[in-house]
Image (cartoon, rainbow, N blue to C red; front, side):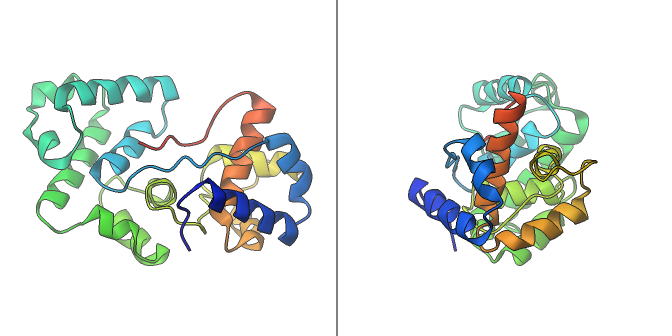
Amino acid sequence: MLIRGQGDVDEGLQVLLALDPRLEPIAAIAGPLPLRLGSPGFAGLAHIIVSQMISRQSAQAIWSRMLSAMETVDSDRFLALDVAAVSQLGLSRAKAACLRTLAETVMSGKLDLVAAANLPAEEAMALLTALPGIGPWTAEVYLMFSGGHADIFPAGDVALRAAVGDAFSLTTRPDIATVAEIALAWRPWRSVAARLFWAYYAAKSGRNALPAAQ
């Protein structure tokens, strides 16, 4: 099952509310859920890597510098940048190394990121997380927002864990395993449930933690 338009998100939410009535007050606070769908490929995954663990504003600034340096962000243009040019982008050393390895793997033909986005989730996750610097959160967000997978819940996301804990009045922020277990109730629309809790988090905290799609 894939999400390809806003109608899919809306349909998924209605199914979730029928599956789990506890979500109704959460949805009332969250408001409309965004589609936030980009295209699969090097740019889509690179944008997620750039955005990890930094503010939205900082990520946007780095991405703007990448666009200025390359015009179009793709694997061959990234590899064409010399060391000095990469150092001017504002990337951490780890992220620069991760992007270079990713670009080399794509250029070698060992990885087709468009094809990977269309694989079953478990197979795609194994393929993506085998790359240095790409962990479960990065792979999950790529499959959700570049591949349109409908049934993924990034339980390692701090904002999602905080939102689930707050929504269900848990005394402490739940750990990854606990949130993953809770999210099983929302299959096969866990990606819509994630959008719901990101929107709830934004409404409650005033901070938008939804990963940005390229």
